[in-house]
Length: 127
Image 1 (spheres, helix red, strand yellow):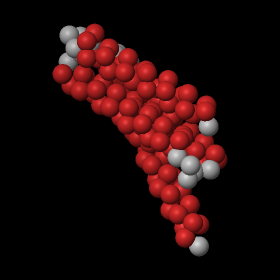
Image 2 (image 1 turned 30 degrees about the vertical axis):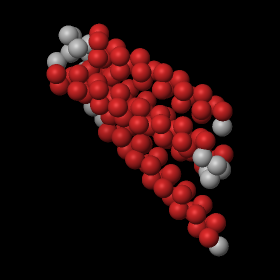
Image 3 (image 1 turned 120 degrees about the horizontal axis):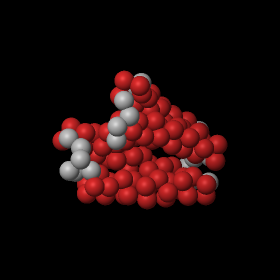
Image 4 (image 1 turned 90 degrees about the vertical axis):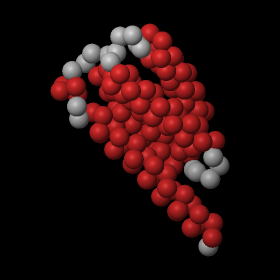
């Protein structure tokens, strides 16, 4: 799954750029609440980039399982963190309010699917 490792590395680099952008360029522009929201988006993005790296180097998942988990995490990052970035940078929260919780739900589904695959794969090993 080199494709997902490359995507993870790219998302990781973007996370660092956005974190630095928020800490330096936005600290005098955004309110304290907006900056906290921006930092939350960066933090959640990095958490999931690290999980994406783990998922795609872990030999206990099949390629199909890696694809499904990675797809959910990537979509979740785009919707959850992406919508927070958009809102803090001026997009009307009223226009896209539903995207953030939807992205959070997708991230939760990714974690649940990963947990299910751990359980299923472990169950098959025990037999």
